Amino acid sequence: MAFKPIRRVLSEHAIAKLDLLITLVRRDLSAKYKGSILGNLWPLLNQLSQLVIYTYVFSVILKVKLSISSLPDNNLTFGLWVFAGLVPWFAITSGLIQAAGAVINQANLVKKVVFPLALLPLVPVLTAFVESTMGLVALIVVVGFSSQVAHATLWLLPLVWFTQLLFTAGLGYLVAGLTVFLRDIPQTLMVFINLWFYMTPIVYPADRIPAAWRWWILWFNPAAAICEVYRDLVLEGRVQHWYEWGSATVIAIVMFAIGYKVYQRLRPAFADVL
Image (tube, rainbow, N blue to C red; front, top):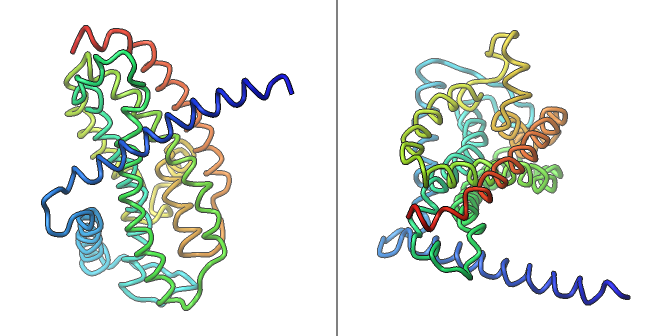
């Protein structure tokens, strides 16, 4: 009974921050495509364009073939497999790129003492995640029509979302804080992401990775584990990468703790620099 007032105060404080975060994400989504005819459909179209390109290059030109028991053996299956990897990849990298400028682009909010600055890097991370759900819904619908089955494993998607969001938020906090003092971070980040993309089995199967490197990539590259679990849940209907997901979750927790701590340590100097 004695803890109820404390819990009530903490709950109201948390709810107020959550409401503010939701408002900021909504504003970011509406402002990003304001005035465009297609509006929020652009993220889906961008993902689909990448899907067409990678499917043509790897499936048609390079003749990469995949066999998934629940799907027909054709180029569409390879396209769906690629798209299942691109959905979380776009959410992670898009959120990370936008988070790099989350503080320096909101200098007016940084100088307001009452504004909770911890929310700034979370806004682009959540915006990118919401945009990626459009591609995920499209993927689930097409897989359902192709296989005539709705896999029960879809209910497990929130587990991988937790890992994905925690990992992206941790990196987002880190780059957002560092960019205030090192303005080369966004450009460096783009180079890193290009390298990271080809180190992640998104457009090629993981079994094409040399055996000596495969274990390291699947266990210590959270993006690789997340992409593989997406494919397990949406395409296969069974989870084959539980251990890799567990390793990614541990790395995500550590990354979030490091990123948030660095951000909090640097935060008092934001207003002076900006």
